[in-house]
Image 1 (cartoon, chains in turn cyan, purple):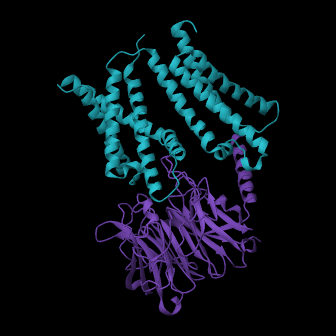
Image 2 (cartoon, each protein chain N blue to C red):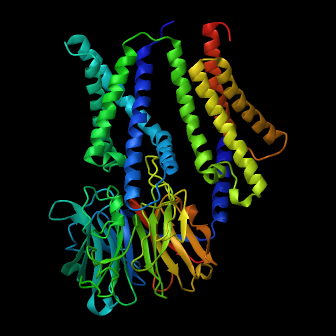
Image 3 (tube, rainbow over the protein chains, first blue to last red):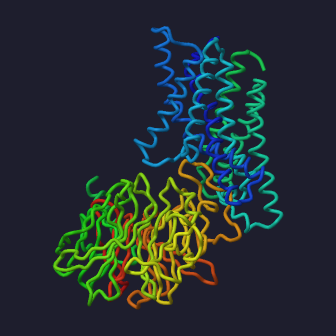
Length: 276
Length: 363
């Protein structure tokens, strides 16, 4: 069965462009930090790049999706009614979309440059180039028909992208991650700290890996695994509240959402394949 | 029946709000237009600025407001405009005041200015620009602009990092992200920390600051400052000459966009804040209370906050801060706090339609 490829191609091109754009800000920051003798190492660089991909990337994904939707629609209409078209045409549309979006973000919204990597002329050029490749990627996606697996893979990657933030926080800044769950890490005994860090990190890393494996193999068992873990968290959250008398914790809503998305993906695969 | 229920509910709500508040308030003035700073000329007279460029006198006895003429031409945009006003220590004899404001420089860029003037017959006379920051920016943001007198009679001025120019806070060849120290005539004190440093601007007193807000000198001569971090990392610092306060190489905050500004929170040679607020409270002004009218405030810093809409009472015990939230029942973004000569606490609320509120001591 074929799906409506254009919306998914816009979303995929946006995510691809975000992946190219966020390191521009990360690396420009890291270069400056090195220039003032800050101890930038491979690990700190990786931490910054991955964090930026997840946290800065999310708002950019929204902006780029809107920009690409407009630009590629215009490009599509022009290619239909004029002699222009092809991958370079869409690539130019992508570059224009990113360039205009970043200018408008400054002029219409903030009057200041929120995107650190876009402050220098060289940084601007790199952003346009990222948009160019985003357009090229979009053209490649729309130039052949897609099946439902394309949509499943997109949502699977997007799900993993959301989990990436939790994974990174637990791996790189466990004190802050623990604080988000109500723990003051330094107040816990060494044994308790160890248990908290290993179990929580393992929990999020595992579900992240399940979703990636689901995307790669399209085996619904991996998506089900992630779903079961989060549904379980929601269930035992409610048991803790109502059976064990803990404070009401509305995080179970998020856990249900995080359980539902991979479960739906798994069910979609089963429905389409009629078997596991 | 339903109407009765609402009346009863309203009664209980009002009663409970009143019962929760430890202080009573008196609104002295309202409908102020972006009021930013105030200073007491005497117990019944306040001189205050509005960011729009107005300098006004408020008579607390008859609540009349008088516009002061001949104020400097300011660049009122975003966070810029007519900012701080303070009195010269010899104001009673010389009528001298100091004003900080953002205005366009000769290259049509916005920057921070500090002027002196004499307040005579509801007008400013003998105006003189005594400092123009080498911190030109496109938009009037992160100006700083607080002024304070040191005990030796020199002036301190906050000069913010200009947002788009944050890295310049680490370099001494500009006034972005610096605390400035000058004489009242605009000359540079000979004992400023960088007067003999090649390439450094001699007015710089300390550096590595972000968007500074409160600036005070206590009766013991200590200098305290607070500043906005980005998302998280608002700071309160004890200021010492020549020291580097780290922004943006070290910070407890992340960028508004979500990006990491720096993964580092400390480094040798860079000062740690006395405390940092994460998540941000957006501190605005600050006083150190050393009067008797509110004994519970004695020896405490009172920090007004825009985002948390309260005053943080901050005390330090053995180097660790203790904090208490005050006046949150006002539910206002608080811009400025001042103590009257008799020791009363006055608050200015932020933005258009702002109010001047007197906090009455507990009975």
